Image 1 (cartoon, rainbow, N blue to C red):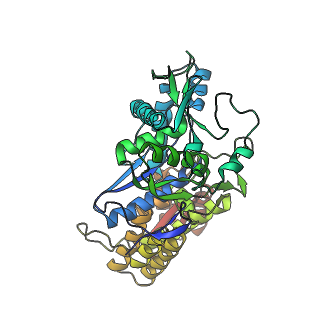
Image 2 (cartoon, rainbow, N blue to C red):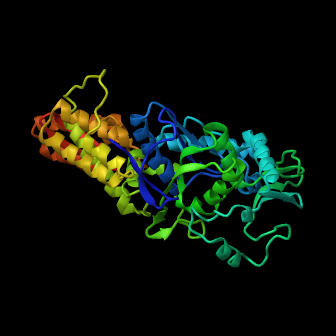
Length: 458
């Protein structure tokens, strides 16, 4: 089934065809590790995790890189404030990021390049740009000469003359043009720095991704992905410097951008006090509920976070897991790969249409509930697997507690006491036990297979 993807550069949906079908290359801009990431930062990794899963079904090798920016002014500020080396900051929050992404069901990238491990490649790329007349050294800085690249602005649709006209009056005196951007900047003694032909300094943010991408994926890659907030200037600058450094070669053949996450209709920001960190949310909500919420909207559109939205995600998963719990007696062949229903693959192959894929998943759950069978159970699990959902044991799902703590042994003891009370026709005691369990946040269901219990998650 052919895959089609919206290319931000051409502004249209195009049939995807990799440069080398035997080695598909994907690069996603990763985090700057100076603090915990917020839930909006997780949307791209979740969405493009699904894309990589889909690509792996179609191609023998997919090389997926997601970088770590571990040198940055925000990192420097945090290290100076705490009186520690930058490594103490970056090591801590890199590991926190990895754990958060893994808990959300995101597979680790094949390559995780760090900016500080590629200083040599960064310096070499800058030297190439200078030699080609695309960059210049000035006052300890090296800047990219935007005027040397006529196609600048093609990705974002911005006109260079308009950018110059809209630039701030206080342009740095060492710039030839207001739109020129920094490739290398000097470091004072208290800041991290590396020796270079232009003095001790550190790289600008934009050059890092170009150097790391070229080092691991090649001068031309198939897909470059990231948030729409990176389209300008970060990705625009990446295109300019990479194209010029590589003799005019196309840098990325497809550009994919996910929309932003808002909070009750407003942009997430520290000033508004509505930033929700992933590691905190993971203590309050089931990880799959967070993942489902991030997949409910089409990746190119804005997505709103709200308490209602997370409650709806939990409720949806409750329904799907309830079906799987009812099918627990049906065994599947452990040696056979789960099938991927054509309807789900078709939705995802159409510009990663996760809302449509989730709608198809709901239909598969309905079919499995109405006609319990190994084939219907396998189809439901196969669809869930590609989306990174339904990965929990159903019984374990219903016993997840979120931010509350439930003593499972205490629950089982109360249920046994309730069974004994009902057998003795002491219904008053049985009702009292049910009320006690309700107060604990536990819901019980009496059925043909006995009494089952679950935890209220919202």
